[in-house]
Structures are given as C-alpha cells and as structure tokens.
Image (cartoon, rainbow, N blue to C red; front, side, top):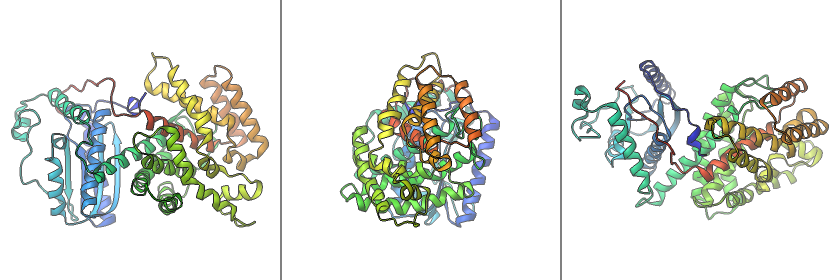
Length: 483
C-alpha cells in the first residue's frame, strides 16, 4: 500500500470550485498584506470533476520543486510559503522579494518548458494585487491550438482533456524524471518529496481512530486544550520546515553530524515558533517535530536508494549530539519536560530513542504496521486498512515504550498499567469498541500516550518512505464535463 492509495478522491461540483477559488483569493490577499510583496500562485490545470488524485499530486510536487529551483538559481528571497492539498485541487503560494515582471517571465518559462509544464497554472500577482497577464496565449493539450478557442467551442470533452493530462504525467514519470537534471534540481525534488511524506505522516497519525487518550476523529482523548483541527494546522505549519530539514541533509552530506545537528537545531527553534503560532501556544507536535525533522534530514543524506536501516543509522548519528547535551545539565537546569525527566530519573526520552536509531519504531511499531497491512481484509478500503494497521502499531508501541508523556502525567505505575493493557489487547482480536473503552479509562485517569503517538507518525513516515513510488495501481475515472 502506498501513501497515495489513501488519498481522498472526490468529484468537485461548481459550488466546490467557487468556494475554493474564493478561499484562494483570501489567502492571496492575506499574504500580500502580511508581506507587501508579489506572490506566485501555483495550481494544476486539470479538466473534469476530479482535481486531485495520486498522479495529479505527484505532478504538482514536481511543479513545486521546479518553482523552488527557479527561485534558488537566482538566490531569490522567499518570505512566506503556504500549501493547500484538498479534493478541490493542489495549491501553493510564495511571497517573493523580487520584481513581479521578472517573476512572470520565469514562471512562463516553466509553463512552456515541456509537456508537463503545460499542466502548470502559475500566476504572478504584484504587490498591489494585480495578476500579470501572459504575453502569448497557451496551447491546447490535445490539438495544440489556442486554448481559449477550444474551450469556447467545446472542441474536446473534459474526459478527453483529463485523460490527456494523465497520459502526460505518466509519460513524464515513466521517462525517469531525473534524466538530464543537475544535482540542484534533483535536490529540490527530493526535499519536496520527503517533506510531503513527513507532513502526511503527521496528518495520518492524527486521523487514525480510535486512539486511546489521544486526539482523533471522534474526540480529544485526555486533552482539553487541543483538537483535530488544531493538529491539522500544526502539521501544515511544519510542512516547509520538514522540507528544509531534507535540504540541509542534501547540502551537508559530507559534514560531521555535530555540524548538521547544529543547523537542524537552529531551524527547529524557528519551527517550534511556527507551531505555537498556529496552535495559539499549545504543544501539539514538539516530539514529532524533533523525530521527523531528524528523519527527513537522514533520509536526504542517505540517498533515494537507502534502506530503512540505513536511514535509521544515519538518524542515530545525527541525534547523538542532542543526547550529549543532557549529560551537561546540572540539578535545577531542566527547562523542558524531557530535561527534567533526565535529571530526576536518567530517562533520555525522545532524544535517546532517536540517538539509538528509533528502536521502538524499528522493533515494534513498524513491523506491526507492516504485518497488519499484509493481513488486512481485501474487501475493505485502503483507508480503513491503513487506519486499523496504525492502531495495531500504536498498541505495539504502547506495550513497549517508556512513554514520557504518561510518565510526566501519572508516573511509573501508570506507565506499567498502560503497557499491560496494550499487551493484553494485542494478544487477542481486539475491536474498535475495546479501544473506545480504553479511551474512556484513559480520560478518567488523565492518561495520554503522546510519545507512542509521535512514534506512530515515525512509523508512517518510514513505511511510506520505503514504499511510496508515485505509481497509482488503478487510474481513477476522471470523466465528466467542464465545470
């Protein structure tokens, strides 16, 4: 099973398109007001009622990588980025410190670079809110004529245009996208790809349901200060930081781990601020931010052909400097929960887990996820099978991990109780009802296995990193009329 297999594919209606367009204009206006700079607005030019599927998103991320590379080549300063992935389509905004006319010329060149570029719709909006027009009209995907004339006369159906778009995308990826590209362009693509997997792993963890004591689609567990929409906002705020972690790994492949970690720590401090800004000061993903940030960097450093053990070995080397920091603490100096636990009981928490190559994920969570997916019932949807596999992985982690969140809330006795309860459920064919009963008990006892939840996102990341190849096993029927 691949990451794209669980993507929501829905047909859009006219009202959906109009709402998405209005929301995009609002985001553009907000970003212009905040930065006072020109914007690049990127969407995909896809006819028909299906605006997002596995192939379309893959092509969109390629477009993002091309735009990032075009900006990096001129050392262009990007002040803000914002990405939206919805059934109504894939969108990204950049606020860029550069002349709007110059940006428009560069973006038009990307649109005309090859057949795939003709699927890109890249607008440039100046600081006053005016959208710059193209000098030359775009050509039809099918006949090569003026696109406006074909659209007015309905020369080609939406089904034909959608099929042609998917043919272009499949042909592009079948021809090995990296052929003829230089290292900089490849790096942009790889960073975008890794960051997208990390972002999706956070969202998948949040949506896995029912999770005892944790925020999910049904309730907020033992948390009174956070909910599912907040987790989604937090994940979105961290997306570009994960991409930056991958870029750091690509740029510093030959550097010492201490040097790489110093760069990661600096960006991590900025990422924490972005998370807190998105959540109103609530710590939703601090542990996952640390773990996935290091893994994004390690995945980039290890290379596209690296195995999971090789990625984890690289991650362990990168994380060891963070563990060494604990040894220099003196009594009373602990600022974070993890530092205080180390001073009180010598527990190293998420730092120790990362510095050891994530043994809980490697030995328990990831194997449980794989086994559950392999034996999942074929008559169930891919989304349901992944959800339940995630629940198996979560219980496997809960049964073995010294969860720092439980220790901090309720102590060692409660931790052993949680571990025993999880092990008992794993020993039999548990149901969602069993997990809901466990959730009720956890809420009463104020128990939240947050450390296990963070490692579930690590398991999702590692699984999709090794299986996500961009192929879609069954093309969606994208027929329909113009909307």
